[in-house]
Amino acid sequence: MKPATEPDSPARSKVQMILRVNGESHDVAFVPHKTLLEVLREDMRLTGTKHGCELGECGTCTILVDGVPRLSCLMLGLESDGHDIRTIEGMAGACGAHPLQTAFAELGAAQCGYCTPGFLLAAEAVLARDPTPSRATLVEELGGNLCRCTGYLKIYEAIELAAARMQKGTPDA
Amino acid sequence: MMRLPPFRYHAPRTAAEVATLLAGEGPEAMIVAGGTDLYPNMKRRHQMPKTLISLRHVDELRGVQMNGAVRLGANETLRALEWHGALKERLPALWTAVQSISTPLLRNMGTIGGNICLDTRCNYYNQNWEWRRAIDFCMKCEGTVCWTAPSSSICWAVNSSDSVPVFIALGATFTLVSHEGERTIPALAMFGEDGIEYLTKRKDEVLTHIDIPDQGTARSVYRKVRRRGAFDFPVAAVAARVALDGDRVADSTLVLNAVGPKPVVCEEAMAYLAGKPLSDEVVTEAARLAGRGAKPLDNTDHLSMWRKKVVQVETRRALEALRP
Ligand SMILES: Cc1cc2nc3c(=O)[nH]c(=O)nc-3n(C[C@H](O)[C@H](O)[C@H](O)COP(=O)(O)OP(=O)(O)OC[C@H]3O[C@@H](n4cnc5c(N)ncnc54)[C@H](O)[C@@H]3O)c2cc1C
Ligand code: SF4
Ligand code: FES
Ligand code: FES
Image (cartoon, helix red, strand yellow):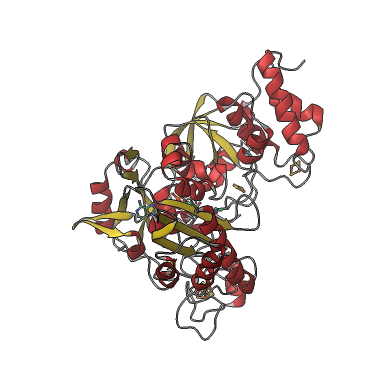
């Protein structure tokens, strides 16, 4: 059932926009009140970005906007205009998985995996700022991403392993 | 899924254009900054603006200026303030408050102006539309009764902003711009007595900047109580500013928040502190007097009786931290 006070459709017709996602420009049409999460999943079929609480309370919808982790459930598709969006689909490079992805798989940092895309992107942003983060920094910076399976420890350990490998320039050895 | 209701959307480039649009669109328009308060509220159908006026292209509302005083652009992100080293050094209490807001992800998005204009919160209000309809709507939105205090004629939804008590303690002013001009008000004057009319800011006004006067030798602290170390809003909070003359209090401000619809300035405790050293006895008595102003009800996390007690404990700790 819909609330009685729903405003009378000021803007239900679709807008057409070029969205820059994972390094490619996409011509996308969507209704202007859709969140970027909805646009990515429903209009672009990029379902790697997960849909959790929709209210900013879980972090599973995390994406990178110009390299900064943001919640795609709390920004409009319209608001990504002119920005560089990165989703989990864009994380693996031409030569395979990102060192963070490899380390997550090796150390069991993903169990059900629902939180994993958000954690990976948030972790990538942490490492871009601080290539050798302390455990305290990881705990603080990943404080907006919830995981109900792992107990977080394996996630921190995987990020530390990936960070060490990236320092040495040996992605997965 | 909880989707946003439809709206018209504008993204002007100057504060003057924002003011013109607000005047033209009337009271059903709302400003959106980071959207971290407004979009959840729209999804839950608490706030249903027909028009959104976004500040995302209004560059003049950003930035931090520091000489003796400090000026913050209202649309600066919480993260930019958190990562501003000089600001952290100069105004540690404000830094503590900003850094404690929600999560790093939300601080990348949320702004300081949005934090000041944050909607008041209540367990009976911050629920989706179906939940609220199931128990029948409350006075703050669509209904006629207050579920927190059924015989109350006012709404007790809680001012839950972390930065607001600090701004009041530091003697900050807020500048508001409308199509009719500009006015600057003391931080406390921004807030109404009731959880529904929680801002005195008119709907056609945009908050442009915050000015914090030179603090001289005064020092401040902020203490926040919440269940988890991230995500959670305060359920009790205190900001304390003390200027000492030798070991005695020359001047102080104590402000409580998250214990009612409006931040509480603890006048009685402040008068008591004047001229006294921050001894154990004095600090305990000041905390007791401050706690009298807190009237928390059971509409947040944690029991109201506990919040009323803990506010005294936190006030005492805040004053202890300001000893010479
Ligand atoms: C999970 C979660 C946890 C949170 N935890 C906390 C917390 O611990 N502490 C806390 O204080 N907050 C918390 N918040 C609330 C919110 O994230 C912050 O208060 C944030 O600073 C709001 O800023 P914003 O720019 O996103 O505001 P918006 O959502 O854009 O706006 C909020 C309100 O302010 C108005 N507004 C915004 N800017 C202006 C302006 N310049 N002039 C006039 N009006 C304006 C808007 O119209 C709207 O009514 C939390 C939110 C979520 C979702
Ligand atoms: S305090 Fe009462 S009127 Fe206000 S939001 Fe809560 S239940 Fe509704
Ligand atoms: S789905 Fe965005 S924070 Fe939970
Ligand atoms: S792996 Fe299941 S929620 Fe994190």
